[in-house]
Image (cartoon, rainbow, N blue to C red; front, side, top):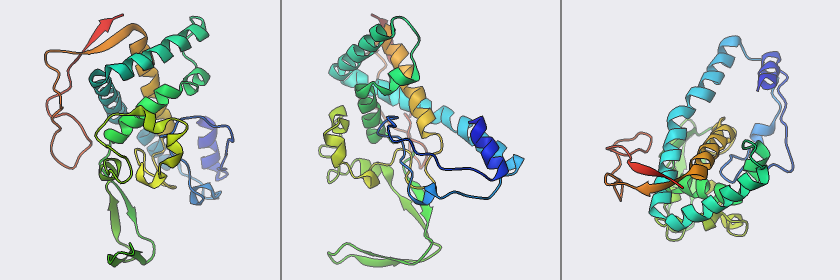
Length: 256
């Protein structure tokens, strides 16, 4: 990251593409617009602002993702058991060493579980974009209108994630949607946990690593279980804010 900041300061920031990247399905893939090399240099104030949003912007979102993932594992014990088996196997392969980046990227079922959690519980209910030119929307079935240049357009991520047209039986927690075979059929424009395009979430890779690492160490030692205070289904707080429970989330951790 220090190297990226130095490049940005000098105005020599370059796009770098890795062919064998396995950072996870939910990681935002950059568009061709975002791959264009920029010659604009950044001021110290701009760099500080980007660093702050990179780190501070991940506190509430990462903790919420961990919370909802744990909630779904309580509701779906068979998924939790399968994930635990992968975690135990990974721990054996590490031979007692701490979790490494490479080992985390090889955990396919972990990625499937977190990806499905982000589908059901997108941390931001919507994302917005500014229309840069007049655009005609025509669905071919009678719906036709023009979005004028300068119009701010909101895309309902939560609505897309729960649309049966794109995700059959959308209320069911099913990590198999994101296995190697099925994820090829997912339209990336309908799955927006971190946005899409050149203005996507800058911290998506960092956030996913945090969530997976925390879930790894919790499930390595504990089973996440329902408590007397666990609310199923959970009651969400009202309002156009980040998704969250109205009265907190209560679960138990039981030693294995």
